[in-house]
Image 1: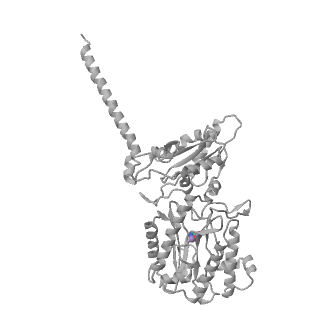
Image 2: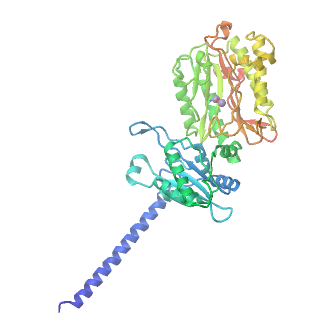
Image 3: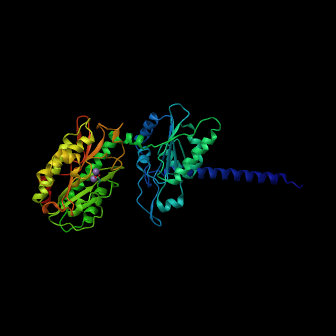
Length: 484
Ligand code: GLY
Ligand code: MN
Ligand code: MN
Protein backbone atom coordinates (compact mmCIF):
# COMPACT_ATOMS: atom_id res chain seq x y z
CA UNK A 1 0.00 0.00 0.00
CA UNK A 2 0.78 3.52 -0.57
CA UNK A 3 0.76 4.27 3.13
CA UNK A 4 3.14 2.04 5.06
CA UNK A 5 1.44 2.07 8.44
CA UNK A 6 4.18 0.37 10.53
CA UNK A 7 6.86 2.56 9.01
CA UNK A 8 4.78 5.69 9.66
CA UNK A 9 4.24 4.55 13.21
CA UNK A 10 7.96 4.05 13.68
CA UNK A 11 8.57 7.45 12.19
CA UNK A 12 6.01 9.02 14.46
CA UNK A 13 7.56 7.40 17.47
CA UNK A 14 11.01 8.57 16.40
CA UNK A 15 9.80 12.10 15.68
CA UNK A 16 7.81 12.15 18.90
CA UNK A 17 10.76 10.94 20.86
CA UNK A 18 12.99 13.48 19.16
CA UNK A 19 10.57 16.26 19.93
CA UNK A 20 10.37 15.08 23.51
CA UNK A 21 14.16 15.00 23.82
CA UNK A 22 14.36 18.37 22.17
CA UNK A 23 11.84 19.84 24.60
CA UNK A 24 13.82 18.41 27.49
CA UNK A 25 17.00 19.88 26.03
CA UNK A 26 15.48 23.31 25.65
CA UNK A 27 13.87 23.06 29.08
CA UNK A 28 17.25 22.10 30.45
CA UNK A 29 18.84 24.99 28.57
CA UNK A 30 16.29 27.52 29.74
CA UNK A 31 16.57 26.24 33.30
CA UNK A 32 20.30 26.61 33.06
CA UNK A 33 19.86 30.08 31.65
CA UNK A 34 17.49 31.17 34.37
CA UNK A 35 19.77 29.56 36.91
CA UNK A 36 22.59 31.50 35.34
CA UNK A 37 20.40 34.57 35.69
CA UNK A 38 20.40 33.99 39.43
CA UNK A 39 23.92 32.74 39.69
CA UNK A 40 25.19 35.68 37.73
CA UNK A 41 24.66 37.68 40.96
CA UNK A 42 26.85 35.25 42.89
CA UNK A 43 29.97 35.90 44.87
CA UNK A 44 32.37 35.65 41.96
CA UNK A 45 30.73 38.28 39.85
CA UNK A 46 31.39 41.96 39.45
CA UNK A 47 28.23 43.44 40.89
CA UNK A 48 26.79 43.47 44.41
CA UNK A 49 24.13 40.85 45.07
CA UNK A 50 22.60 42.28 48.22
CA UNK A 51 21.69 45.82 49.09
CA UNK A 52 20.60 47.13 52.48
CA UNK A 53 16.88 47.33 53.25
CA UNK A 54 16.97 51.07 53.86
CA UNK A 55 16.73 51.86 50.16
CA UNK A 56 13.24 50.33 50.09
CA UNK A 57 12.34 52.05 53.38
CA UNK A 58 13.09 55.39 51.70
CA UNK A 59 10.76 54.58 48.81
CA UNK A 60 8.12 53.49 51.36
CA UNK A 61 8.50 56.79 53.25
CA UNK A 62 8.34 58.87 50.07
CA UNK A 63 5.22 57.15 48.74
CA UNK A 64 3.53 57.14 52.14
CA UNK A 65 3.81 60.92 52.11
CA UNK A 66 2.74 61.26 48.46
CA UNK A 67 0.34 58.35 47.96
CA UNK A 68 -1.37 59.69 44.83
CA UNK A 69 1.79 60.87 43.06
CA UNK A 70 4.09 59.28 40.55
CA UNK A 71 7.83 59.90 40.71
CA UNK A 72 10.23 59.55 37.82
CA UNK A 73 13.97 59.56 38.47
CA UNK A 74 16.47 59.13 35.68
CA UNK A 75 19.81 57.70 36.70
CA UNK A 76 23.15 59.01 35.46
CA UNK A 77 24.35 58.13 31.98
CA UNK A 78 27.87 57.32 30.87
CA UNK A 79 29.63 60.52 29.82
CA UNK A 80 32.33 60.29 27.19
CA UNK A 81 35.58 62.22 27.43
CA UNK A 82 37.12 60.56 24.33
CA UNK A 83 35.87 57.99 21.84
CA UNK A 84 35.27 54.79 23.85
CA UNK A 85 36.58 56.45 27.02
CA UNK A 86 34.12 57.41 29.73
CA UNK A 87 34.42 59.71 32.73
CA UNK A 88 34.28 57.73 35.99
CA UNK A 89 30.65 56.79 36.59
CA UNK A 90 28.79 58.09 39.60
CA UNK A 91 25.08 57.45 40.05
CA UNK A 92 22.85 60.52 40.42
CA UNK A 93 22.39 61.12 44.16
CA UNK A 94 18.57 60.97 44.40
CA UNK A 95 18.50 57.86 42.24
CA UNK A 96 21.07 56.14 44.44
CA UNK A 97 19.28 57.30 47.62
CA UNK A 98 16.10 55.51 46.52
CA UNK A 99 17.54 52.38 44.89
CA UNK A 100 21.17 51.66 45.82
CA UNK A 101 21.67 50.92 42.13
CA UNK A 102 24.96 51.96 40.55
CA UNK A 103 24.43 51.35 36.86
CA UNK A 104 24.11 53.75 33.95
CA UNK A 105 21.00 54.47 31.89
CA UNK A 106 18.49 53.20 34.46
CA UNK A 107 15.21 54.91 35.32
CA UNK A 108 13.04 54.56 38.38
CA UNK A 109 9.29 55.05 38.30
CA UNK A 110 7.20 54.94 41.46
CA UNK A 111 3.45 54.84 41.00
CA UNK A 112 0.40 54.47 43.20
CA UNK A 113 -0.91 50.93 42.86
CA UNK A 114 -4.53 49.91 42.62
CA UNK A 115 -4.29 48.41 46.12
CA UNK A 116 -5.11 51.40 48.28
CA UNK A 117 -2.13 52.99 49.99
CA UNK A 118 0.33 50.78 48.19
CA UNK A 119 2.72 51.64 45.40
CA UNK A 120 4.83 49.99 42.74
CA UNK A 121 8.55 50.24 42.10
CA UNK A 122 9.37 49.98 38.42
CA UNK A 123 12.90 49.93 37.07
CA UNK A 124 14.04 50.36 33.49
CA UNK A 125 17.45 48.78 32.97
CA UNK A 126 20.13 48.21 30.39
CA UNK A 127 19.35 44.66 29.22
CA UNK A 128 21.81 41.82 29.74
CA UNK A 129 24.13 41.61 26.74
CA UNK A 130 26.94 39.06 26.80
CA UNK A 131 29.09 40.84 24.26
CA UNK A 132 28.79 44.32 25.75
CA UNK A 133 29.31 42.95 29.25
CA UNK A 134 32.54 41.34 28.04
CA UNK A 135 33.79 44.85 27.27
CA UNK A 136 32.42 47.01 30.02
CA UNK A 137 31.49 44.69 32.85
CA UNK A 138 28.53 42.87 34.24
CA UNK A 139 25.03 44.31 34.14
CA UNK A 140 22.14 43.58 36.44
CA UNK A 141 19.65 43.47 33.62
CA UNK A 142 15.91 43.21 34.09
CA UNK A 143 16.28 40.10 36.31
CA UNK A 144 18.70 41.91 38.59
CA UNK A 145 16.23 44.76 39.03
CA UNK A 146 13.67 42.26 40.34
CA UNK A 147 15.98 40.01 42.32
CA UNK A 148 18.50 42.43 43.81
CA UNK A 149 16.72 45.78 43.88
CA UNK A 150 13.24 44.58 44.77
CA UNK A 151 11.45 46.12 41.80
CA UNK A 152 7.84 45.01 41.34
CA UNK A 153 8.24 45.31 37.59
CA UNK A 154 11.29 45.81 35.40
CA UNK A 155 11.78 46.45 31.70
CA UNK A 156 14.64 47.11 29.31
CA UNK A 157 15.36 50.82 29.19
CA UNK A 158 14.34 51.19 25.55
CA UNK A 159 10.74 50.39 26.57
CA UNK A 160 10.59 53.47 28.83
CA UNK A 161 8.71 55.65 26.36
CA UNK A 162 6.25 52.95 25.39
CA UNK A 163 5.36 51.88 28.94
CA UNK A 164 5.21 55.29 30.57
CA UNK A 165 1.72 56.51 29.53
CA UNK A 166 0.12 53.36 30.96
CA UNK A 167 2.13 53.62 34.18
CA UNK A 168 1.25 57.25 34.81
CA UNK A 169 -2.49 56.60 34.62
CA UNK A 170 -2.89 56.08 38.34
CA UNK A 171 -1.21 59.36 39.38
CA UNK A 172 -2.80 62.72 40.21
CA UNK A 173 0.53 64.47 39.70
CA UNK A 174 3.96 63.55 38.43
CA UNK A 175 7.19 64.50 40.15
CA UNK A 176 9.96 64.79 37.63
CA UNK A 177 12.93 67.17 37.48
CA UNK A 178 12.51 68.86 34.13
CA UNK A 179 15.41 70.53 32.32
CA UNK A 180 18.30 68.19 33.06
CA UNK A 181 18.11 66.15 29.85
CA UNK A 182 16.14 67.36 26.85
CA UNK A 183 15.74 63.90 25.31
CA UNK A 184 14.17 62.46 28.45
CA UNK A 185 12.07 65.61 28.96
CA UNK A 186 10.61 65.06 25.50
CA UNK A 187 9.83 61.40 26.21
CA UNK A 188 8.06 62.26 29.44
CA UNK A 189 6.06 65.12 27.95
CA UNK A 190 5.07 62.84 25.08
CA UNK A 191 3.96 60.16 27.56
CA UNK A 192 1.88 62.67 29.48
CA UNK A 193 0.33 63.88 26.23
CA UNK A 194 -0.64 60.31 25.28
CA UNK A 195 -2.14 59.96 28.73
CA UNK A 196 -4.01 63.27 28.37
CA UNK A 197 -5.50 62.19 25.04
CA UNK A 198 -6.63 58.94 26.60
CA UNK A 199 -8.76 61.01 28.97
CA UNK A 200 -10.94 61.96 26.00
CA UNK A 201 -13.72 64.36 26.88
CA UNK A 202 -13.70 63.54 30.56
CA UNK A 203 -12.81 67.17 31.28
CA UNK A 204 -9.73 66.07 33.20
CA UNK A 205 -6.48 67.81 32.38
CA UNK A 206 -2.92 66.64 32.05
CA UNK A 207 -1.29 65.64 35.34
CA UNK A 208 0.81 68.55 36.64
CA UNK A 209 4.58 68.09 36.70
CA UNK A 210 6.27 69.03 39.97
CA UNK A 211 9.93 69.24 40.93
CA UNK A 212 10.91 66.35 43.24
CA UNK A 213 14.01 68.16 44.48
CA UNK A 214 12.54 69.83 47.54
CA UNK A 215 10.69 66.63 48.52
CA UNK A 216 13.88 64.57 48.29
CA UNK A 217 15.90 67.44 49.74
CA UNK A 218 13.75 67.40 52.87
CA UNK A 219 14.25 63.64 53.28
CA UNK A 220 17.98 63.80 52.63
CA UNK A 221 18.51 66.76 54.96
CA UNK A 222 17.75 64.60 58.00
CA UNK A 223 20.30 61.83 58.22
CA UNK A 224 19.18 58.41 59.47
CA UNK A 225 21.38 56.36 61.85
CA UNK A 226 22.70 54.38 58.85
CA UNK A 227 23.59 57.55 56.97
CA UNK A 228 25.29 58.98 60.06
CA UNK A 229 27.43 55.83 60.35
CA UNK A 230 28.55 56.21 56.73
CA UNK A 231 29.24 59.93 57.18
CA UNK A 232 31.27 59.22 60.30
CA UNK A 233 33.37 56.82 58.30
CA UNK A 234 33.88 59.30 55.40
CA UNK A 235 34.82 62.04 57.87
CA UNK A 236 37.15 59.85 59.91
CA UNK A 237 39.03 58.55 56.86
CA UNK A 238 39.30 62.08 55.46
CA UNK A 239 40.39 63.61 58.78
CA UNK A 240 43.08 60.95 59.17
CA UNK A 241 44.30 61.73 55.65
CA UNK A 242 44.63 65.42 56.59
CA UNK A 243 46.55 64.39 59.70
CA UNK A 244 48.90 62.17 57.69
CA UNK A 245 49.62 65.06 55.33
CA UNK A 246 50.59 67.22 58.29
CA UNK A 247 53.37 64.67 58.85
CA UNK A 248 54.33 64.03 55.22
CA UNK A 249 54.36 67.38 53.40
CA UNK A 250 57.80 68.90 52.83
CA UNK A 251 58.94 72.12 51.15
CA UNK A 252 59.74 71.42 47.50
CA UNK A 253 56.88 69.00 46.98
CA UNK A 254 54.40 69.91 44.27
CA UNK A 255 50.75 70.53 45.13
CA UNK A 256 49.82 67.61 42.86
CA UNK A 257 51.99 65.24 44.89
CA UNK A 258 49.95 66.15 47.93
CA UNK A 259 46.76 65.68 45.92
CA UNK A 260 47.95 62.24 44.78
CA UNK A 261 48.70 61.30 48.39
CA UNK A 262 45.19 62.37 49.39
CA UNK A 263 43.67 60.23 46.66
CA UNK A 264 45.77 57.29 47.79
CA UNK A 265 44.83 57.68 51.47
CA UNK A 266 41.13 58.10 50.70
CA UNK A 267 41.00 55.06 48.42
CA UNK A 268 43.18 52.83 50.56
CA UNK A 269 41.09 53.44 53.66
CA UNK A 270 37.66 52.86 52.20
CA UNK A 271 36.47 55.80 50.11
CA UNK A 272 35.32 54.95 46.60
CA UNK A 273 36.15 58.41 45.25
CA UNK A 274 36.64 62.03 46.24
CA UNK A 275 33.56 64.05 47.19
CA UNK A 276 34.73 67.07 45.14
CA UNK A 277 37.88 68.29 43.45
CA UNK A 278 40.58 68.56 46.12
CA UNK A 279 41.98 72.03 46.76
CA UNK A 280 45.71 71.86 47.51
CA UNK A 281 46.79 75.47 47.62
CA UNK A 282 50.17 76.76 48.76
CA UNK A 283 51.06 80.42 49.36
CA UNK A 284 49.10 82.87 47.20
CA UNK A 285 46.99 80.00 45.83
CA UNK A 286 45.43 79.61 49.28
CA UNK A 287 43.62 82.92 48.70
CA UNK A 288 41.72 81.45 45.71
CA UNK A 289 38.59 79.96 47.25
CA UNK A 290 38.04 77.10 44.83
CA UNK A 291 41.60 76.72 43.53
CA UNK A 292 41.98 73.41 41.70
CA UNK A 293 45.05 73.75 39.43
CA UNK A 294 47.14 72.04 42.14
CA UNK A 295 50.35 72.34 40.12
CA UNK A 296 52.82 74.57 41.97
CA UNK A 297 55.81 73.81 44.13
CA UNK A 298 55.33 74.34 47.88
CA UNK A 299 57.68 76.88 49.47
CA UNK A 300 58.99 77.06 53.02
CA UNK A 301 57.48 80.08 54.75
CA UNK A 302 54.14 79.76 52.94
CA UNK A 303 50.90 78.35 54.26
CA UNK A 304 49.28 75.31 52.67
CA UNK A 305 45.48 75.18 52.56
CA UNK A 306 44.00 71.75 51.85
CA UNK A 307 40.25 71.43 51.33
CA UNK A 308 39.54 67.79 50.58
CA UNK A 309 37.06 65.08 51.51
CA UNK A 310 36.58 61.50 50.47
CA UNK A 311 33.26 59.86 49.67
CA UNK A 312 32.07 56.63 51.30
CA UNK A 313 29.01 54.94 49.80
CA UNK A 314 27.92 58.25 48.21
CA UNK A 315 28.40 60.43 51.32
CA UNK A 316 31.12 63.05 51.33
CA UNK A 317 33.29 64.65 53.96
CA UNK A 318 34.31 68.30 53.49
CA UNK A 319 37.35 69.22 55.56
CA UNK A 320 39.80 72.11 55.33
CA UNK A 321 43.02 72.41 57.25
CA UNK A 322 45.73 75.04 56.87
CA UNK A 323 49.29 74.51 58.06
CA UNK A 324 52.79 75.82 57.38
CA UNK A 325 54.77 74.29 54.50
CA UNK A 326 57.78 74.62 56.80
CA UNK A 327 57.88 73.63 60.46
CA UNK A 328 56.22 76.62 62.12
CA UNK A 329 53.64 79.36 61.56
CA UNK A 330 55.22 82.83 61.22
CA UNK A 331 54.05 85.57 63.59
CA UNK A 332 51.50 87.08 61.20
CA UNK A 333 50.35 83.59 60.19
CA UNK A 334 49.93 82.68 63.87
CA UNK A 335 47.81 85.79 64.57
CA UNK A 336 45.67 85.16 61.50
CA UNK A 337 45.27 81.46 62.24
CA UNK A 338 44.31 81.98 65.89
CA UNK A 339 41.66 84.41 64.74
CA UNK A 340 40.04 81.96 62.32
CA UNK A 341 40.28 79.16 64.88
CA UNK A 342 38.62 81.31 67.57
CA UNK A 343 35.79 82.10 65.18
CA UNK A 344 35.37 78.43 64.24
CA UNK A 345 35.49 77.09 67.83
CA UNK A 346 32.93 79.63 69.04
CA UNK A 347 30.59 78.72 66.19
CA UNK A 348 30.87 75.02 67.04
CA UNK A 349 30.22 75.84 70.72
CA UNK A 350 26.99 77.67 69.86
CA UNK A 351 25.63 74.85 67.66
CA UNK A 352 22.56 73.07 69.03
CA UNK A 353 18.96 72.45 67.97
CA UNK A 354 17.05 75.71 67.51
CA UNK A 355 20.03 77.77 66.33
CA UNK A 356 19.89 79.06 62.72
CA UNK A 357 22.72 79.07 60.17
CA UNK A 358 22.60 82.88 59.63
CA UNK A 359 23.16 83.29 63.40
CA UNK A 360 26.26 81.12 63.16
CA UNK A 361 27.45 83.07 60.11
CA UNK A 362 26.87 86.38 61.88
CA UNK A 363 28.87 85.22 64.86
CA UNK A 364 31.72 83.86 62.69
CA UNK A 365 31.84 87.19 60.84
CA UNK A 366 31.77 89.29 64.03
CA UNK A 367 34.69 87.43 65.59
CA UNK A 368 36.61 87.83 62.33
CA UNK A 369 35.74 91.53 62.05
CA UNK A 370 36.95 92.15 65.62
CA UNK A 371 40.18 90.45 64.60
CA UNK A 372 40.52 92.44 61.37
CA UNK A 373 40.09 95.60 63.47
CA UNK A 374 42.68 94.63 66.06
CA UNK A 375 45.17 93.53 63.38
CA UNK A 376 44.70 96.97 61.79
CA UNK A 377 43.36 95.51 58.54
CA UNK A 378 40.02 97.35 58.78
CA UNK A 379 38.84 100.54 60.45
CA UNK A 380 35.41 101.47 61.75
CA UNK A 381 32.77 99.81 63.91
CA UNK A 382 31.97 96.11 63.92
CA UNK A 383 28.26 96.66 63.21
CA UNK A 384 28.86 99.06 60.34
CA UNK A 385 31.43 96.73 58.76
CA UNK A 386 28.99 93.83 59.04
CA UNK A 387 25.99 95.82 57.74
CA UNK A 388 27.93 97.13 54.75
CA UNK A 389 29.68 93.78 54.19
CA UNK A 390 33.08 95.51 54.18
CA UNK A 391 34.67 92.41 55.76
CA UNK A 392 33.93 90.48 52.57
CA UNK A 393 37.23 91.77 51.30
CA UNK A 394 38.88 89.25 53.65
CA UNK A 395 36.00 86.85 54.31
CA UNK A 396 33.94 86.66 51.12
CA UNK A 397 32.09 83.37 51.62
CA UNK A 398 29.41 81.91 53.84
CA UNK A 399 30.18 79.93 56.98
CA UNK A 400 28.02 76.85 56.41
CA UNK A 401 26.26 74.59 53.96
CA UNK A 402 24.43 71.28 54.30
CA UNK A 403 26.59 68.22 53.80
CA UNK A 404 25.63 64.73 52.67
CA UNK A 405 25.50 62.85 49.39
CA UNK A 406 26.38 66.10 47.64
CA UNK A 407 29.12 68.19 49.18
CA UNK A 408 26.82 71.21 48.96
CA UNK A 409 23.87 69.07 49.87
CA UNK A 410 20.20 69.44 49.08
CA UNK A 411 17.62 70.73 51.56
CA UNK A 412 15.94 74.09 51.93
CA UNK A 413 17.79 76.74 53.95
CA UNK A 414 14.59 78.67 54.66
CA UNK A 415 11.02 77.67 55.41
CA UNK A 416 8.21 80.14 54.61
CA UNK A 417 10.78 82.85 53.99
CA UNK A 418 12.46 82.39 57.39
CA UNK A 419 15.85 80.74 57.98
CA UNK A 420 15.10 77.32 59.42
CA UNK A 421 16.20 76.06 62.83
CA UNK A 422 18.83 73.37 63.20
CA UNK A 423 17.40 70.00 64.21
CA UNK A 424 19.01 66.73 65.30
CA UNK A 425 20.17 64.66 62.33
CA UNK A 426 21.21 67.59 60.16
CA UNK A 427 24.85 67.66 59.04
CA UNK A 428 26.53 70.87 57.92
CA UNK A 429 29.94 72.54 57.75
CA UNK A 430 31.44 75.35 59.82
CA UNK A 431 34.22 76.91 57.75
CA UNK A 432 35.27 80.47 58.53
CA UNK A 433 38.27 81.81 56.65
CA UNK A 434 40.61 84.72 56.15
CA UNK A 435 42.10 85.59 52.78
CA UNK A 436 44.37 88.46 51.74
CA UNK A 437 44.57 88.66 47.97
CA UNK A 438 48.08 89.01 46.46
CA UNK A 439 46.97 92.19 44.67
CA UNK A 440 45.47 93.86 47.77
CA UNK A 441 47.70 96.95 47.96
CA UNK A 442 46.57 98.45 51.26
CA UNK A 443 47.62 95.60 53.51
CA UNK A 444 50.82 95.20 55.51
CA UNK A 445 53.30 93.04 53.61
CA UNK A 446 53.37 90.23 56.18
CA UNK A 447 49.64 89.52 55.64
CA UNK A 448 49.83 89.26 51.86
CA UNK A 449 49.15 85.82 50.36
CA UNK A 450 47.71 84.52 53.61
CA UNK A 451 44.76 82.23 52.99
CA UNK A 452 43.34 80.31 55.93
CA UNK A 453 40.21 78.22 56.20
CA UNK A 454 39.34 75.78 58.96
CA UNK A 455 36.41 73.57 58.05
CA UNK A 456 34.72 70.84 60.07
CA UNK A 457 31.69 68.63 59.52
CA UNK A 458 29.07 68.98 62.22
CA UNK A 459 26.22 66.65 63.16
CA UNK A 460 23.41 68.29 65.13
CA UNK A 461 22.47 66.11 68.13
CA UNK A 462 19.71 66.33 70.78
CA UNK A 463 22.00 68.12 73.21
CA UNK A 464 24.25 70.09 70.89
CA UNK A 465 26.50 68.79 68.18
CA UNK A 466 29.22 66.33 67.31
CA UNK A 467 32.25 67.24 65.20
CA UNK A 468 32.53 64.32 62.76
CA UNK A 469 35.91 65.50 61.45
CA UNK A 470 37.50 65.93 64.87
CA UNK A 471 40.42 63.59 64.14
CA UNK A 472 42.04 66.26 61.97
CA UNK A 473 44.26 68.35 64.29
CA UNK A 474 43.71 72.10 64.25
CA UNK A 475 45.37 73.78 67.24
CA UNK A 476 48.70 75.42 66.43
CA UNK A 477 50.49 73.29 69.04
CA UNK A 478 49.05 70.02 67.67
CA UNK A 479 49.89 71.01 64.10
CA UNK A 480 53.43 72.15 64.90
CA UNK A 481 54.03 68.93 66.85
CA UNK A 482 53.25 66.98 63.66
CA UNK A 483 55.39 69.29 61.49
CA UNK A 484 58.46 68.97 63.74
N1 GLY B 1 34.84 72.34 49.35
C1 GLY B 1 33.99 73.42 49.08
C2 GLY B 1 33.46 73.99 50.31
O1 GLY B 1 34.12 73.98 51.31
O2 GLY B 1 32.35 74.38 50.38
MN1 MN C 1 32.43 73.32 52.62
MN1 MN D 1 35.50 72.45 51.75
